[in-house]
Each structure stands twice: as structure tokens, then as C-alpha cells.
Amino acid sequence: MPTITPISELRNYGNVLEKVSVGSPVYLTRNGHGAYSIRDMQDEENFQKAEAMIRLMCELNTGIRSADEDGWISEDEVMKHFQNKKESRNEH
Image (cartoon, rainbow, N blue to C red; front, side):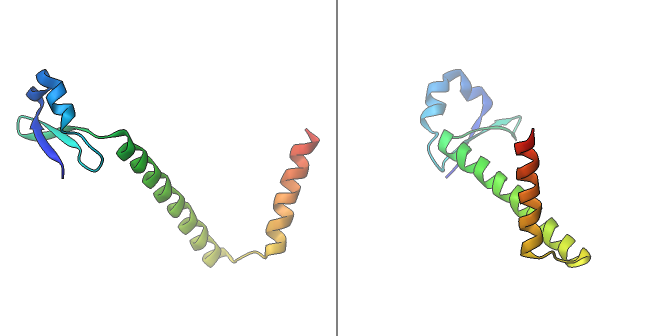
């Protein structure tokens, strides 16, 4: 459960940080409006993983739409493509 605290409470930052735990960020307000959040590092890592997963899913959906519009390629063509990339990289 998040904690909502005025930013002025940071004068006693130790008290504010004690309220932060995994799954329970502290939201700091300025003039009654949300301004900042303080969260546990594990929550930050989970957030970054979720962002990366969303980006990957968007790229996969883009690929599927492209394949539906322009046609799919065979598994053999995919293998040849990556084999050629591997060979060209080994030449350098």
C-alpha cells in the first residue's frame, strides 16, 4: 500500500525512508499534487523488467503485423539469414 506524504516531510528523511518497502512506495506531494515517488530497489528492478517486456512485446507485435501484411518467411530463410550474418561477422 503506497504512502502519500508532503514533500516537506523530507526534512525528516529517515522517517520517510522507514515507510518505504517492497510493494509500498512513498509518494511525495507538492502543493497537494503528486511530484515524486520513492520506492524500494527491488520494485525499481521489477519496473525496469516490466518496461523491457512491454518494449519486446511491442516489437513482436510489429513483426507479426509486418508478416501478416507482407508475408511470412520460411524457417530455412531465417536460418540462412542468421548463418550469413554469422559468416560475415567471422570474416571481419
